[in-house]
Image (cartoon, rainbow, N blue to C red):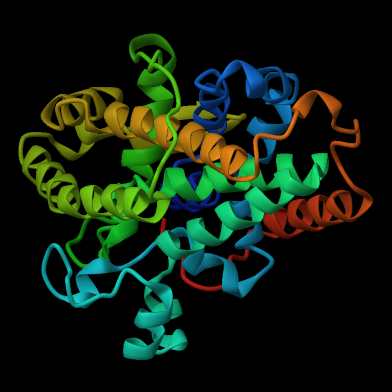
Length: 321
């Protein structure tokens, strides 16, 4: 019975802690709204609950669509050493060099963000409320994922170094423990991005540069914590789970010198700036005159399907938590 209690929690956490974690993704999208200019903020603020709720749809889609997984990460270490000059930043050039199948196998997040920005710009041009909101929410998710160091490493969950669970620890456990009470998300204003692709690639490379630190510091800290100090049993949604202890999480956060908070803040700024850039590139349409249909019939059907697939607990493709 004791063995069963120890095993079940890790399975529970694997389902609950997708990417930044539902908690962090919702918070990131919500805070991004407040960086927007006056011409945009009224529309986005009126729909802030939608933007938060649907920030996690791309994670749910991983349970329904096999092609979804690679949109969340890129294994840059597959392409040599930092700054990975062997990998063309242009999608067309990368396909010529490596093939579409190979790129998909190792992740396509920076290019997928470009695709989503193009779609959002078009939605602004066509003044389609439902599409603007859906694409804004999902674009926010992919941009946030690009700011996570382990989303740029083939050792995405410490599986190569005996550190299974570090993915969810860094991006779910620590934000849930510290974000609301101790972190500052007053950031400033969104800016127009003259070269969105270059901006996103710079953020992806920052993540890659930090991946080794994320893994190494956790391993070093583990040497100073007994197993019963590193992990603790806590109640979560009525279920007793085994997870990283508060003491270990706080010590790790101190070692990282605020890295998780910093990447959340940078995610928020990047998302708001990408929303703003798409709007400007669309000709700065008047958002006050948009229709009130925030969810199309087709979107609602997809939302229902995503929720059903997510509840099944069977991810299609690579499990990166």
